[in-house]
Length: 580
Image (cartoon, rainbow, N blue to C red):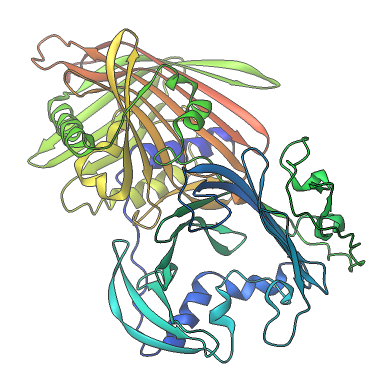
């Protein structure tokens, strides 16, 4: 399938439509804790654990990174890395953003070691039933759930993190306290766990090579909290065996430098011990395909500085001090989207589309661009048509229906019809007439929102909002199609809203995370709207003026720019002729 075709499907489904997720096949509710755990293991792809020969993940830390979790201090940022190599080689490190050690530990195949923030070292030799870091095989499940002598009890179903969940109590004979686990009653993902005044929440599950992993983990203690965000995961990629050597402590500093995220040596500490362990040789990993998942910053939770690096257009933002205005602001923006939809008449304009790709000659196409509107009570229908002014070819973007029932059977029909062969050459990206659909009131439950603050945009005072779809709440995600492969796609974005009347001036959408299984690493749409006065239309409309879509697929970058002009009413006596 050509780049034109796959991008057409992506934009059409990803930007234009209200999403709804196909309901899962109904299952009989579990009666025992073992049944819940079995469904949990099936949901996370535990059957694929034996095929994992190497595993690496790295990411960010934010919270109380003190030497003791009970010390009160300001929140800090840090980084972490974790490596595994079959059968039982492990290493992990967590450092502050200034490369101070928080903790390091691992197993060189025979011996488990630990280095704390004071550079004090401890070790132990694994024994049956207490292997800890030297346990053989790859696992992502909590260790307590894997112990044979732990008693599991199914307690009840209750609401946790806004989801109905099964509560399971785990009693370890060696512990004074019971651990409690909550599994989503629909997906069976682990939502949270708790023990004696502490709790851990797991969210943002991603599929990496068939294994479902939580990319965000929040730990809460009585006087501290820590948020761990995974930024990159690699499965079955080569790992140097030197990674599993215990780092040396010499003259109050850690070596080797490979444990640090920068080229600087780690700061010196007191109470330093010394060791020098050379890792044994391990068998070479079989020749299997490597899988990499890179996690983009989440626009609704990452630091403003990080967001500005990803979206340079946010430089000049005056950050909001809190989120107290968010709900009221969303109500006003949602009301405005309804007003725009109800007052948009049938329109026609001139559209110029320019496509550019490295190593390929730039192309330009001119279209008559037509929007037909139907409003029936709470139902708003929009049809989008194009006529190529050079060839006369006609193209239709299927209808998008927004109604309170939110069934949208047209979504599946659109996917099938757009996937069918067309002789003409429509623009690669379509469906921008209602790209504010993410702020439509009925869609708000499917995304997380954040009020970023205020910013001058083209001399206009704007209020800036971010959104990120919640994959677990999107009932039917948009599907990305490329070379016969499909993958679900979730979006996030930033909107600049007119502070005076709450219409969207500019909207940028990005992927929530890349789709390595279909080689999609970026899909960004930058949409600029302009208040437009149409003769004989009493309301001031908000119509797209310029749209730039940038995509990266299989190492190739495609850029497509749409420019619109000469908006006017479309009447039946127009010379544009459409297919019946």
